[in-house]
Amino acid sequence: MEPAAARTRRPRPQLPAHDDPPVVHGARELPARRAGARAPSVAGVGAADRCAGSLAAACDAIARVGLDGTADRPAGLLSHGQKRQLEIAMCVATAPQVLLLDEPLAGMGAEETERMLALLASLRAGHAILLVEHDMDAVFRAADRVTVMVNGAVIASGEPEAVRANVEVQTAYLGGH
View 1 (cartoon, rainbow, N blue to C red):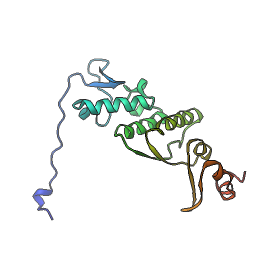
View 2 (cartoon, rainbow, N blue to C red):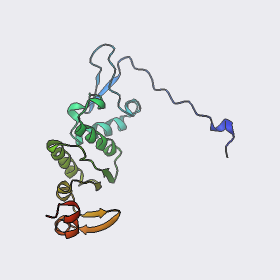
View 3 (tube, rainbow, N blue to C red):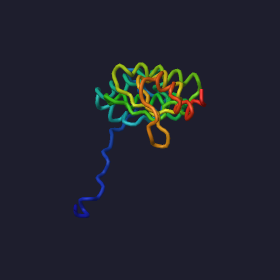
View 4 (cartoon, one colour):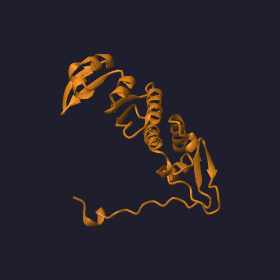
């Protein structure tokens, strides 16, 4: 066990102050739009500002998920679907081999769902994707392999069309059709 003195919190490193903080937009930095305006608060931008590789990865991820036109807006002002896209961009920027996505379509309307499904399709070539989702029609469109669980037990697993035809799956999730 460490002595009490060794367990005290270390001071957080201070990032250098900027008179005109950058706003990340696409693959470039833009100055804040008006005097005294603050740059959007984006986790890690201060550190990324000091690391060209991180900044490039973040800008590339923003573009890959289709948010390059909104990169200068604070995350809190994005639509629900855009916030989900931003969450995926944050993952993609770290260059993962596997994306674990928990209900990325929850709360989305038809247009946002289509945009998210197109995004997931574009990410399939470079990433294995484990998707937990209740929108079964979207799952059948997006997945190569589907596993369906009810009360913690697997009731079907396989190619989407075989799972869709499964009587237990139809009863549990597809309204018996």
